[in-house]
Each structure stands twice: as structure tokens, then as C-alpha cells.
Length: 306
Image 1 (cartoon, helix red, strand yellow):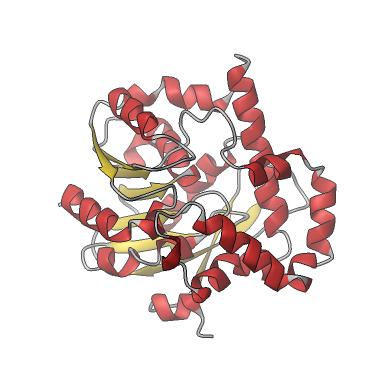
Image 2 (image 1 turned 90 degrees about the vertical axis):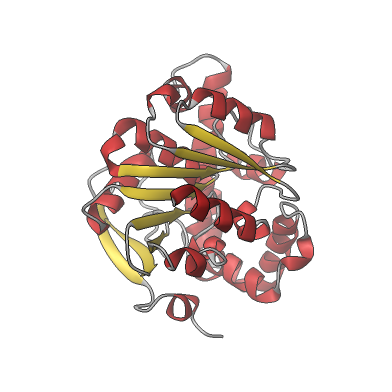
């Protein structure tokens, strides 16, 4: 099967070395295509750059599109020897943007990536010219899926042992089938998910030890953040919510009408909190909007940015 990076980007998969939130060097995988103002595409929890496959070429007609795999995801480095801290993605996104462009960028982001982008716009507003956020877990009251809850409660040592023994690779057909079932569950039209899609979406989990460990670690951080928020203890989620009014850059909020993970009322609430925002509800769209409503998203982004 042809390498997705090579087929999608003129230079294939490239690598940027940044200092992570702890100051350790870490390799970030990315691809870029097109010319013009830099536009970053950020994926959500458990995903990687492949999730934006239907938007890369349409947006590259107008912008320098940069697809990035966050640390621990996709083809980026997965440092399992050290534990993450809440909010590390914000620091790392800042360093990725600074490392790849020398001007304020457009950031298009989905789910967890969108939450990270909102936080970055508050802390470093000079880095973001315009912002597009899709189905953001900004007001999440629980982890939205039973599988996420299960992983968040498992001892990380057990998950890491599964990773080290390469059990995901050993049982690759089963892993792909289970993840395909879950992916179809967040699509309005499950039939659009092809076997090639399943292969590439699950590729990091099957081929790269550490992927499952890092995703589990992120889920545990998210579960603790939500728990602290519900118990009125210090948490990053509340900090982001309380400073939404500080985001001044033009922001487009896109939300799936049938998102069962985070209801569209969250999008409406976010719109009320952001002084310079526009809200568009995506009809016939569930949580996986970048796949399930790609055409609508592309049209909305281009119209907003032009």
C-alpha cells in the first residue's frame, strides 16, 4: 500500500525537533503542501494527521497547509519513559508553530486539538491570526465513550506492558475491527469509512509501540481534569473556560448537529463566550466532523478565511 505521507505531501513526512513541556527534545511528524499564509491542521484524541485527509488538498489551493501529529500520536515520538502533565500540549503546540513559521498562523483544530488551540490563543494571542474549532470538549462533564472511561481507569503499567509485548500488532485484525466499529459510531454515514481508512487510522496503534500508552495517559489526564472541575478543585479546564473572553482573534466554531459526545448546545455556549466568533451547525454530522462533513467544513473554512 502506498505510503500516505508520500502520496499526500510533496516532501512526504517531515520531522521537527522541539523541546517538550519538560524540556526534553522530541520529534514531531508533519507534512506540508501549498503556499501562502500558514494554516495548521490539528487532530483530536486518538487520531493523527490522516483524519484531515479530505481537507488538505482543498485548503492547499489557498494556504500553506501544515498537518501535525501531536507528541504521542500518529508518527510523532512517544516518550513512554516519562509521564505527561496537564496542559503539555499547549506548550508543545506553541513550539511547533514557532518552529515552522515566522508569522501568525491560521489554526484549524478538532476536538482535543481545538481545546489546545483555544488555550494557546489565550496565552500567546500573537501566534494565531484566525481560529477554527470543531466539536470542542470545552464544557465536557465526562469522558464521552465507555472505552475511554475503561482505559482511563486501567493501571498505566498494564497498558504499557501490552504495548511493549506488541499485542496490538499480534492481534492487528481484531484491533482494526474494534476501532472500525467505534469510528463508524461517530459518523452520520458509517458507510463512508473504507478499508483503507481503517488501515491508516489504526496504523499507529498496530505498528508503533507506545501509541496506546500515550493515548491512555492523555485519557487519564482528561478524566482527572473533569473530576477536578466537577469537584471545584484547581483544573486547567476551568482556566480555559474562564478566559474565553480574552480570545480576540476571529474564530469560526463548527459543530456537528448530531454530535453525541459533546452536544451542539456546548457550541452555542462557546459562541456566547467568544466575543469575535461565528457559529455554524453542521447538518448530518456527528463527532467525527473532519471525516463525516469534510465538504461542508472546507467550504465554511474557505469562506470564513477569505
